[in-house]
Image: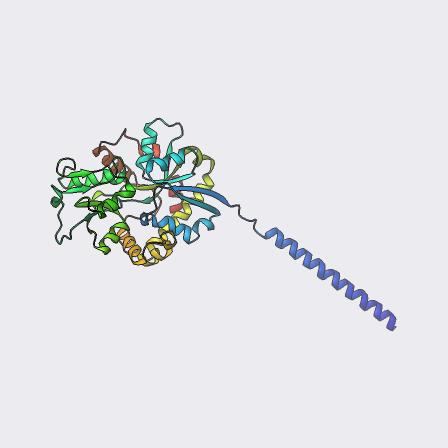
Length: 344
């Protein structure tokens, strides 16, 4: 009897053990089936025309991990000068370029078989400020007449917008000013600091740094007076957009998240988020620069490039004598992905 009971207990224990192991095996098998596949990481190489606080939303997308969340490994390289940035894109040295939209018009006018298309907006106004060597309590644009004006490189958006705004205020840049335009972009600020010019056209944070150091004083904003333009956009070759639509969609989604983040947070929070990309710039200067750009609406809050802004861009280029030909909005702007992302 005891032996029979012992055998029965052994059989029962064995059965329970087998059932438990089978259950664990089934659970593990189901878990393996339901576990999502690891997201494949796509590399995207960006060539930015310069390192600037003007491009804050892009750095936020990097620092806050918005690109990473989309499964993208973004490699950012600074390629100074619009012509060099566009060369990097066309030659295959970059997948995406962050540069002025006017460069896509220049390339198209040369008869490219694979046109460069603007697919996402980053900035929507000019980003330069008029800086005076002397402090002026009551500034008027007419005070520039007869002065020496240190302007930007001819053919670039800063120069074209600068001249456009001056003309809007009744100033002929080539007759009413001693206009200097033969200094490279990277050396303009140092030339002014060393004594060249009564006025200079500068981006942030240089404008705020000069003001803090007493080297100059911000008296006006070219961005406020020029209206909306697709000043700096993300662009890629048409062939890349066709072959990598899913990647471009993820990229645009990350940019949109960053644009919304910047819009919802304070200039100080944005400055803190992008500080790793400006290690030599004082945080208070960065905050001041972000505040200026944000308050005048320079940062686009969504990636859609506006048709009216595109027309304004070409009007400005035409006024400067730099528009090779008028190009229809739909020819060089692809908003399909930007609209899809923004409306979700």
